[in-house]
Amino acid sequence: MRLMVSKSTNVIIIGAGPAGIACAIQLKRYNIDYIVFEKHEMGGLLKNANLVENYPGFPNGISGNKFVQLLKKQTRNNKINIKLETVENVEWAKDTFNIKTNINVYHSKYLVIASGTKPFVPKVPVICDDVKKMVFFEIYKLGQIKNKDIAIIGAGDCAFDYALNLCVNNKVIILNRGNQIKALPILQDRVSKVAKIKYFDNTVVQEIGTIDKQLKLILKNADESILVDYLIIAIGRKPNLDFIDTNLLINPYVFQIGDVKNGQFRQTAIAVGDGTFTAMNIYSILNNK
Ligand SMILES: Cc1cc2nc3c(=O)[nH]c(=O)nc-3n(C[C@H](O)[C@H](O)[C@H](O)COP(=O)(O)OP(=O)(O)OC[C@H]3O[C@@H](n4cnc5c(N)ncnc54)[C@H](O)[C@@H]3O)c2cc1C
Image 1 (tube, rainbow, N blue to C red):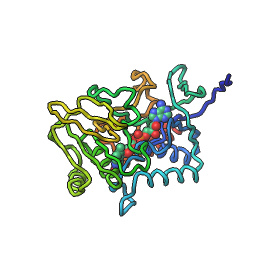
Image 2: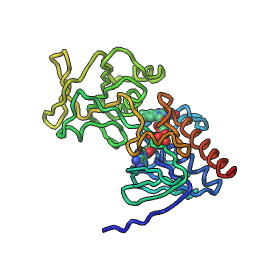
Image 3: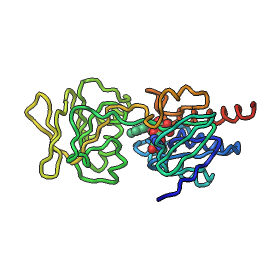
Image 4: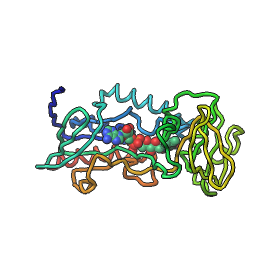
């Protein structure tokens, strides 16, 4: 049995993506004590990005993976306090947040939610247990795969960015259930120039089966099916707030930063700006009390 020791700090930050890291770096500069919790690996969603070209300071763009390596280096150099624990529940009592992770219970005066987004999971096709290990919502989990056939469902920035990333070593098809493409024109243009990426509109995957260790995608209104090694689903994302009662979000000591609150404006520069702004705001509140 593990002994639970509760710990107190001024600020707890949930999530070590760009937003949470920026907030922690700025809090550290003010000498305000904080803890960042991260449930997977620091860097957040960014590790999936093919090429980040809109973050100032990288004149030739930078891959998401390289960007995350730099963030890791910066957190190490600055001794940023990140605990690899999953926040499971948040409660508020007597002017204190009680935060339960998978390992411990912590207390803080301020709570910064930087937990990003989670993917929409489609109702159709149903993803049964026997195909789960071949269906992905983020591509970093695939590692350096080569010579595979991959289908991507979606037609937004993520779907097109994933295709450009994966086509370097694999063959990719993009399946759009409608005929409107939401991806940035620059991504559409790049995809249209890559022979190893094929795009199909009005194509709905109705069912997923398996055949000879491959996925069999059965299409609606078509006699055909498509065989692939992996399926990526990129049909949108929603705020990741599973650990908190949403009534608590209006508490004046709760700050939401980054993608979790930015709706369609989900960009690294905005997340980082939110993080720095919130740390400065907390500093100002603490000093005016
Ligand atoms: C394919 C792709 C390409 C992209 N390209 C660009 C681009 O070119 N330019 C750009 O500006 N942006 C791009 N983005 C968007 C960018 O990645 C996000 O805007 C940015 O990562 C948001 O940062 P965040 O910190 O708000 O959230 P996230 O990066 O999502 O980080 C949230 C973190 O919180 C953690 N977390 C969640 N719940 C818990 C919990 N209960 N306990 C502990 N930890 C938790 C998660 O594990 C995660 O690490 C791209 C995204 C994708 C997917």
